[in-house]
Image (cartoon, rainbow, N blue to C red; front, side, top):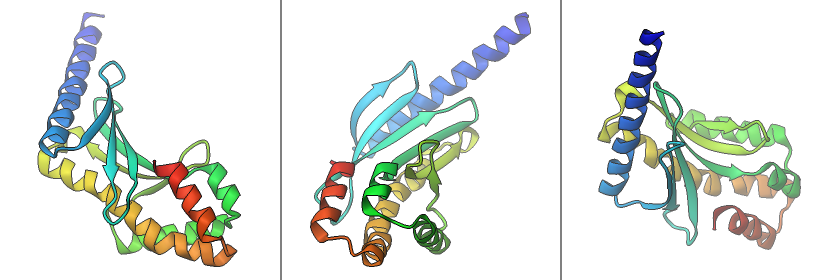
Length: 172
């Protein structure tokens, strides 16, 4: 029983230290932190996408004593339906993009939203690793907008205004 308490305390300390490191790294990088929950070990950052006017929310969370995750929404399930996108074409384009850029990790969450996500093992958490993984997110969003959205638009002849409205809803 005592041993379990010690193990749990060590795990909590590892997660707390990782959380504080991430906050420090984000400050060094001069990122726009908009929300911090120490209890949940969650940080929300607004990130500008190069070449675009809007900003994207990046969620960063220490999940457990081993892993830190970072993610941002690319398309909500609702927007996929609104766009009338064939899921097969979307998946095909995401896989192509991922093949050409090893840092891009696309995911589908339990609600059916398409995300870009990056994970870091806490044993590997250093400034260099964090910075590289963090900046993969806005890079992937930019690549998604420039390489995937036009193909989806072409496939379904989505009007430019409708596409802009969806991007505005998602990223502002």
